[in-house]
Image (cartoon, rainbow, N blue to C red; front, side):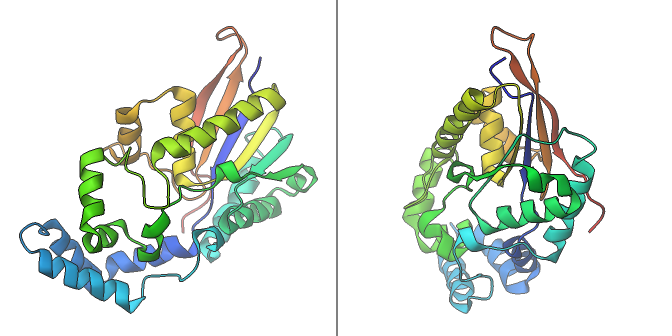
Length: 265
């Protein structure tokens, strides 16, 4: 079989930005902006005024790059408990791949505290596992605010669709799928019939699923934005298991998706 025996994919734990976003959503000014955003065609000046006020305040910005956003305490606990429980579900991996972003490294560090045997496993920092790059939009920390202040970008996204829209100086979904397809080829080549663990991000997990299950644009969008609400959760665990008798070269079959192994927050 050309595929690993197991491919286990873990999203990072709750980050400082995840927590900041929750506070932003509860903020009265941002709630007023959200209402204005729904009426932006009728009252564009109000939506722009509120968007500019939020951006100028800097209250909901971490003032750092996406790559150096850290876990918060909740995320650290989630990762520790995930490591403890994961030891009961899978074999010790032969190789660990981790995104270069701080929150992914910190997730693996905390998982290792819960599962000390991981310390003996070779770990490789893998840039192809990074999160989708949002380019210029990153400094706004909110795509709605970004589009209100750059209406030509909203028009472009509306015309191209969320799947194909590429952030200025950033990536679109096919860009992410392409680099993750390259990584899948590497593990098929180098880790056939081995056990692989990867610590990565929201869109990277969806891109891996889309590549392995050959999802098209509409199926991907349904997975990410549809009513089934299948967005990857913090420290959600996804497991593919190799089936050597399926197909000429075997097949990876999804057996767990977005599984939560930690207790209530």
